[in-house]
Structure formats: C-alpha cells, structure tokens
Image (cartoon, rainbow, N blue to C red; front, side, top):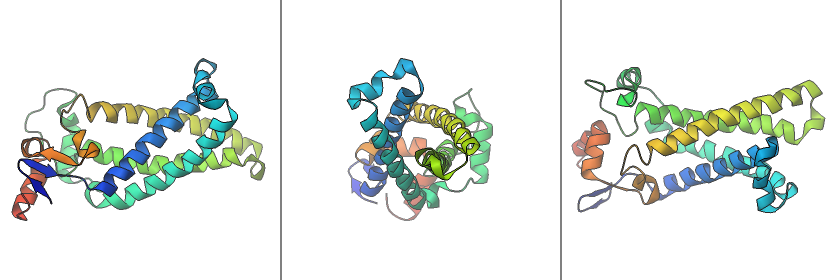
Length: 209
C-alpha cells in the first residue's frame, strides 16, 4: 500500500482500467440499445453515424464488456466475491441509505452493496453476451429462441441500466470522495476510516498505514 502524506492508494492502475472499460462500454451499449429499440431514442445511433455502424460497434462493444466482466471477476473476487455475516447485517439495515440505522456493521474493503453490484456486473456480462450472441447470429438458432433472447436482452438492459445509474449516484454525490478511488486511486485517510473502517484496521495491523 503506497502512502502519500494523508492519502492512501486504494486501487491499482489495472483495477481502474478494468472499471472504466466496464463503465464506458456499458454506457455505450445502453444508449445505442435504446436507440435500436425505441423510435424516441433513434437520434442516438443517428448522431454516431447512422444505424449500421453503431450496430456493429454495439456488437463488438458487447465482446469488450464481456471480457471486462471476466477480468473484474479475476480482479475483485477475493475482496468482493463473498458476503460475510456483517455484510448480511449491512444489507438488512439497507446500508443506512433507506433510513437511519443504528449500529451499522463496519464495511471491509467493499461494502455489501458494492459486493452485490460486483456480482451484477459479472453475471450481466455472461447473460448479455449469451443473449446478444444469439441475436447476432440468429440463423443458427430457432426463431422462438431468437425472439426470446430479444426479450431477455431488453430485460437485462433495464436491470443493468438501473444498477449503473444507482452505482454512479452512490459513487459520486451520495458519498463524496469515493470517485477519486477510481479516477486516480487515492483516498484520504479519514475517508477510508469512515467508509471502510474494517479494512482500515486490517491495513493498520499489516503496518501499511
């Protein structure tokens, strides 16, 4: 763990690279997908260059998103892949977001909400890639299967789009100081003590802060 006065490096460059590839491809996929599905959003692919080019770019961006989600699994599984007992209690109390909570369990490197979002990202990568692949090559599958995949793909887009908006809000306006962890990797010592006290104490035990 690197140190710089009162700043602590929370994320490494490769973690931030994976995060932003996920974020940017997801936003592109969501916006162009809306343009393909709804006439009221048809200006989105038109603005990019018509419908043909964005359609191919959408497909290849889906591959990038899938690969990035698998990289996310490799990078964050150790810290975010398992819900501990204190995470379950955190979820029962809504993380203190839905209503004031007494004795809110302390979070580790990632809180329970971030851990759930981690699994949403991983499984959405598999789910959206699988359904999208069938839509991309429909001749290899039955018509009912292809039609079902259009419905499943659209449903997955709604779920993932909602999760991304919520994640973006909680990572910026709702928790000032959080966005720095994924912009340049540094957070303040006080921020880490407040947001992830269990992880901060772990770093103290290791002599890293």
